[in-house]
Image (tube, rainbow, N blue to C red; front, side, top):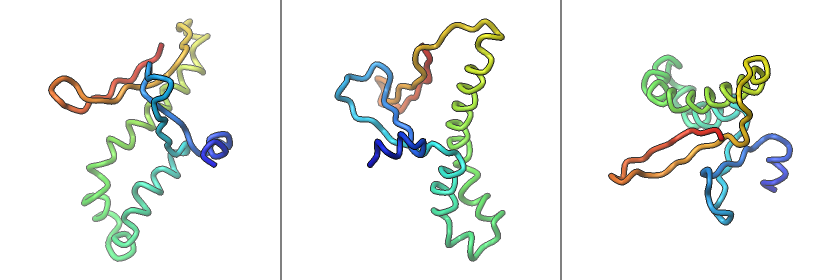
Amino acid sequence: MLDTLVDLGYLTTQRNLDAPRNAPYRYGMADPALRFQAAVVSRYRSELATSNPRAVWVAYVERQIDQYMGLVFERVAEQAYHRLRERQDLPMVEQWGRWEGTDRAGTPREIDRAR
């Protein structure tokens, strides 16, 4: 079922770059508006129904929006790269991806990479 949703463009698959072949994939919603609906609107449905939407934004959404928009920006950057690559004489990119994990101190890290 998941493969069908990926084929239809509703879900995306990701795993760390250079991960072993048996590393699990992570699935995510492909459409940014649908992701926002699931992550924010559905999550705070009760508060939105009973409170001022601006107050809900300030109390809950505002502190999370940078993390949400970071993923959106990464997709916009990749799309712009493909559109402008030939015109700007940019190098070919074989694979876009990221690495997520912890550093030696145990701090969570994410590194975006194209190769």
